[in-house]
Image (cartoon, rainbow, N blue to C red):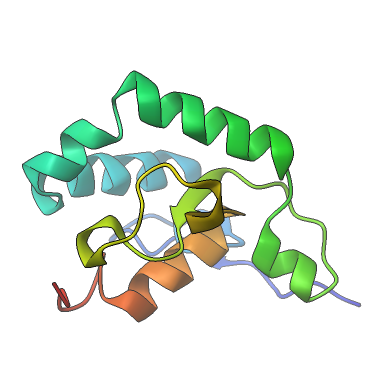
Length: 123
C-alpha cells in the first residue's frame, strides 16, 4: 500500500515536508510550549515523579507496540503511555488496567477527541 504524500510542517513559515503535523524541531517546540502554558500544575508535576516514570517504563516493556495500531494490523512502536480513563475523570494513576501504550499519532488523536489538549476541557 502506498504511503500518503508528505505535506509542509504546520508551523507558520516552515517549508519542511513531513508525514505528521510538525517537523521534529517544531514538534519539540510546540510540545514544550504546551507543557509550559497548557498544562495545570498537577499534571506538570505528576509526569515527572519516579513512580510515574517507573510505571511508564514497565508498560512500554510489556507492550512495546501501539495498541490502537495493532487493532488495525499495523506494528508501530509505542512512545507514549496513556491513561484509558483520564486521572481527572477518576482513572487510576498507576493501574496497568488503566494504561495503554500508544504511538504519538494515536495519542494525539485520542487527546483531541477527549478535548484534553486542543479542545475544550471536559473536566
